Image (cartoon, rainbow, N blue to C red):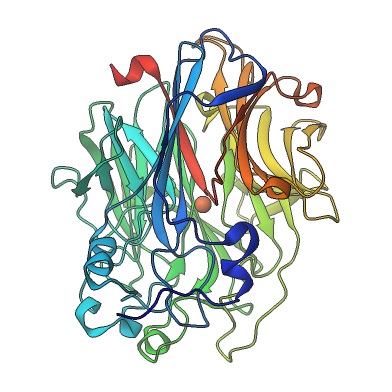
Length: 472
Ligand SMILES: [Fe+2]
């Protein structure tokens, strides 16, 4: 057996050093404040970790096997647990005791015994719907997990209802209607232009499914919804299977192609799809979408260029990553203009935007995001008023970073944004983590509670909150 040794690549060092440990801590230490009365439930977070060194020099930070994290709030105490998601590829590598999967999403670079395996790492987010917990990655089916132990139950097509080869890692679970809205892109095979939108009712039964074709084999990491429309942006990060088969990157940046937006009727069919377009740009994450008369606004963290420097142009050239700004793209259904307009909402760089999820697709005012305004590598969390551009900010301190935040309403009928913001904090300076609880209406006041972890929550992308009563 080869010895396990990660390279000196910055990806595997410092805060990014592989953790590779499953942890269980009953009753974390609360080093400041107290857990607010009534905050009862579970915060699930998901992110990648490195199971084995690949020995390659083209690893990227969004790859790696899914590590699911759970913070359970129960009567004033918080317990923590982390577990690998035991995907098909995790099990194959565990058995082989080495990495078998090659370049990101490129099965042609896998070891022969993994050439035909399912590729999903289940490393992007956690989804809870109709009493079930799932770990998601957009190039594979969901993996169902036990919501109490985090044991992997298995890969699932959700009782035969997912007819595509994969399912998004950015579903929307509507806390008001209890509907689940999702999609799959490159939905019949790698490199295909097929995309499908799915709508499930509160019991997890599929009630709508709309297939259509993308303008090109795009990367569709996220989407947005309104009460009437599903909003799909297509940015020119495009899969060329000839390049993939030659061992190249799964996506390539095409600045000469346009950005397109498809508005798909939430309860209709493909005959009602409306198309809009504009100059090349890209984005990973949507904050929200909202209908305003005949207009549909898409609020997105927009890069006026390529957001992924590790996906080069077809000639192999990498382009610099432009700064990300929260931007409103507007499609006007009443006019003859099929171009979308663009309006910046905030002049501070940001990423990982979230809302009070009860307001997804509905008229709203508040967004929460990671803000990047420091030169020392630290980041802050901000509440952004999308009406007037005002921001309320909390910073964890020099060198420390925040991860994506999670809003929890104070009560089910609380006003928009009235509640708590749960923020994983990377205490880089101490090589460990905190989870802080902020008053979502007054971030600048600082945490109402700080929960100390003696370990490092290495990296998590996205997650979800499940109130205690939803688990019962
Ligand atoms: Fe994402």
